[in-house]
Amino acid sequence: MDGIEALERAYKRDGAYLLSVCRRYVRDAATAQDMFQDGFVSAYTNWSKFSDRGPGSLKAWLARIMANTCLMYLRKKDPMREADDISQIGFKTVSDESLAGSIAGVRDEDLYNMILSLPDNERTVLNMFVFEGFSHKEIASLLGIKESASAMRFYRAKAHLAEMIEKYEKR
Image (cartoon, rainbow, N blue to C red; front, side, top):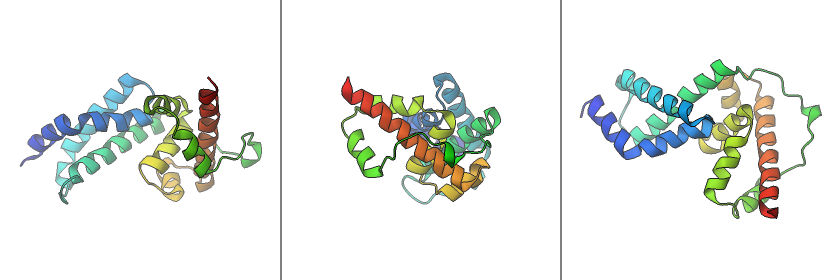
């Protein structure tokens, strides 16, 4: 199967999932759609770099391209290189376990919207760490920030989510 045919099938079969990858990074739906299209253009251009490793490998490769396309966009929009000062934290400590327990009571759509409402730099790190499985060292390298800044943004994202979930539960 040639690249165009494989990408057309992937577009039809996995398009909704791949667009959701873009939406996790980019708040604006129209911009996410642009990143989705740019991602497919990049996949076509780089088709020779794809190596089929069995079922799911094309979907995974395309998801990585979508995430990277969004990261490049975010880097150009806001370099995210500002320092994160640990001493200026005003959030309560949130454990992964307590956050996971709180999330269990939130509808998927509402949680998705909460994540979308996070500041760009926090949402980006949260997505890379939780959904893409990057380490803070890898995130720091990809975003051009310090490893401690990646960890701090993840911490802030968790704290913001905890606050939003607390308000959600009280309504």
